[in-house]
Length: 123
Image (cartoon, rainbow, N blue to C red; front, side, top):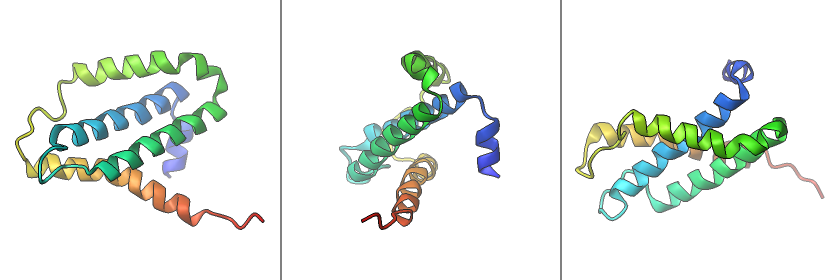
Protein backbone atom coordinates (compact mmCIF):
# COMPACT_ATOMS: atom_id res chain seq x y z
CA UNK A 1 0.00 0.00 0.00
CA UNK A 2 2.85 2.41 0.80
CA UNK A 3 4.47 1.46 -2.50
CA UNK A 4 1.24 2.38 -4.34
CA UNK A 5 1.18 5.75 -2.59
CA UNK A 6 4.83 6.35 -3.52
CA UNK A 7 4.11 5.43 -7.16
CA UNK A 8 1.26 7.96 -7.26
CA UNK A 9 3.33 10.74 -5.68
CA UNK A 10 4.97 13.15 -8.15
CA UNK A 11 8.78 12.81 -8.27
CA UNK A 12 9.36 16.35 -7.01
CA UNK A 13 7.19 15.62 -3.97
CA UNK A 14 9.08 12.40 -3.32
CA UNK A 15 12.37 14.34 -3.24
CA UNK A 16 10.72 16.94 -1.01
CA UNK A 17 9.54 14.26 1.43
CA UNK A 18 13.05 12.81 1.67
CA UNK A 19 14.49 16.26 2.31
CA UNK A 20 11.82 17.36 4.81
CA UNK A 21 12.20 14.16 6.84
CA UNK A 22 15.95 14.72 6.92
CA UNK A 23 15.50 18.33 8.06
CA UNK A 24 13.35 17.18 10.95
CA UNK A 25 15.82 14.43 11.88
CA UNK A 26 18.62 17.00 11.80
CA UNK A 27 16.66 19.35 14.06
CA UNK A 28 15.99 16.47 16.45
CA UNK A 29 19.72 15.80 16.60
CA UNK A 30 21.00 19.37 16.72
CA UNK A 31 18.70 20.75 19.41
CA UNK A 32 19.87 18.36 22.16
CA UNK A 33 23.13 16.84 20.90
CA UNK A 34 25.09 18.31 23.82
CA UNK A 35 22.63 17.13 26.47
CA UNK A 36 22.74 13.93 28.49
CA UNK A 37 19.35 12.96 27.08
CA UNK A 38 19.41 13.75 23.36
CA UNK A 39 16.39 13.22 21.18
CA UNK A 40 18.59 11.54 18.56
CA UNK A 41 22.07 10.11 19.08
CA UNK A 42 25.01 10.89 16.83
CA UNK A 43 24.95 7.34 15.49
CA UNK A 44 21.23 7.58 14.68
CA UNK A 45 21.79 10.89 12.92
CA UNK A 46 24.68 9.48 10.90
CA UNK A 47 22.38 6.64 9.85
CA UNK A 48 19.77 9.23 8.80
CA UNK A 49 22.40 11.02 6.72
CA UNK A 50 23.47 7.80 4.99
CA UNK A 51 19.90 6.70 4.32
CA UNK A 52 18.98 10.15 2.99
CA UNK A 53 21.94 10.05 0.58
CA UNK A 54 20.90 6.58 -0.55
CA UNK A 55 17.25 7.58 -0.98
CA UNK A 56 18.26 10.64 -2.98
CA UNK A 57 20.50 8.52 -5.23
CA UNK A 58 17.71 5.97 -5.75
CA UNK A 59 15.32 8.75 -6.75
CA UNK A 60 17.92 10.23 -9.11
CA UNK A 61 18.28 6.85 -10.80
CA UNK A 62 14.51 6.68 -11.29
CA UNK A 63 14.07 10.33 -12.27
CA UNK A 64 17.38 11.42 -13.79
CA UNK A 65 15.72 14.42 -15.40
CA UNK A 66 15.38 15.93 -11.92
CA UNK A 67 19.12 15.83 -11.27
CA UNK A 68 19.52 19.47 -12.27
CA UNK A 69 16.53 20.43 -10.08
CA UNK A 70 17.45 18.66 -6.84
CA UNK A 71 19.08 21.76 -5.32
CA UNK A 72 16.04 23.88 -6.17
CA UNK A 73 13.77 21.21 -4.67
CA UNK A 74 15.94 21.26 -1.53
CA UNK A 75 15.61 25.06 -1.30
CA UNK A 76 11.82 24.99 -1.79
CA UNK A 77 11.51 22.25 0.81
CA UNK A 78 13.70 24.21 3.22
CA UNK A 79 11.62 27.36 2.76
CA UNK A 80 8.39 25.41 3.36
CA UNK A 81 9.93 23.71 6.39
CA UNK A 82 11.06 27.02 7.87
CA UNK A 83 7.80 28.76 6.99
CA UNK A 84 5.95 26.26 9.16
CA UNK A 85 7.96 27.51 12.12
CA UNK A 86 10.55 25.50 13.96
CA UNK A 87 9.41 21.94 14.54
CA UNK A 88 11.54 21.94 17.66
CA UNK A 89 11.55 25.39 19.18
CA UNK A 90 13.62 24.84 22.30
CA UNK A 91 16.25 22.54 23.73
CA UNK A 92 14.14 22.12 26.88
CA UNK A 93 13.26 18.43 27.09
CA UNK A 94 9.76 17.47 26.02
CA UNK A 95 8.37 13.94 25.99
CA UNK A 96 6.12 14.87 23.04
CA UNK A 97 9.05 16.14 20.98
CA UNK A 98 11.11 13.11 21.99
CA UNK A 99 8.29 10.84 20.76
CA UNK A 100 8.15 12.75 17.46
CA UNK A 101 11.91 12.40 17.04
CA UNK A 102 11.76 8.67 17.82
CA UNK A 103 9.10 8.22 15.12
CA UNK A 104 11.15 10.15 12.57
CA UNK A 105 14.42 8.40 13.33
CA UNK A 106 12.74 4.98 13.32
CA UNK A 107 12.05 5.41 9.60
CA UNK A 108 15.80 5.52 9.05
CA UNK A 109 16.78 2.69 11.35
CA UNK A 110 14.05 0.40 9.99
CA UNK A 111 15.28 1.19 6.48
CA UNK A 112 18.78 0.12 7.48
CA UNK A 113 17.52 -3.11 9.07
CA UNK A 114 15.44 -3.92 6.00
CA UNK A 115 18.40 -3.21 3.73
CA UNK A 116 20.47 -5.65 5.78
CA UNK A 117 17.96 -8.42 5.16
CA UNK A 118 18.17 -7.83 1.41
CA UNK A 119 21.86 -8.67 1.13
CA UNK A 120 22.33 -11.39 -1.43
CA UNK A 121 25.26 -13.74 -1.79
CA UNK A 122 26.79 -12.51 -5.03
CA UNK A 123 30.14 -14.30 -5.19
